[in-house]
Image (cartoon, rainbow, N blue to C red):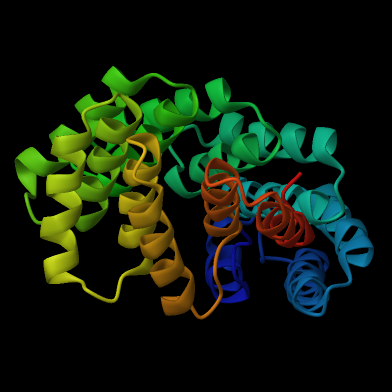
Length: 272
């Protein structure tokens, strides 16, 4: 994620190493302000190659720490857009070397690690964030989802229960716990949670997707198809996971043609 123009320009004069007690230094500051605005415009208009060059020019002028960190984050985000993943990682890490406690940039790097498949590294970043912000539900939830991706279900359950201990009404944590229960074979517990959530949020498509998964795993393919159909029909933009789940259900029912059609739909949405 990019750091916005407003934040960058508002801190520029306060953090710049150059002093404004001479005409030359005032010119440098004016140039920095101009370049900061320019890179923001280039990013907003999708001119990412140009933005890379502009940010490099900003960094060459040696602004203060705050602006440097912001520009390193923006540079990493631009590289991410251009799929220069090695350069993106170097820039995110350089920013965190200068400002280790910057939660926004560490979260950005964690999301980037997920994008390139480095789940263990993402977990480490979220673990740092959880340590620094122990009451932050978002960081715990994100770490829990990564634990699930790594099939570390006990760790995921600990994070989700920790959220619910302080906020028993957290829908995300409840839904996450239902998923953990589903994946660990505690189907009755999972279904109980989904039933409670559906009663509160009857139009939440993801909940029906969750129940459909339970029914598939317990051999109740008719109920599974009913609920995944409901999830898809409720969604403005059905997710690839819904089509993949329905493909599994069709396959279990012996309907290979419908299963293949749903697989093709999921693949057209970017799922390999």
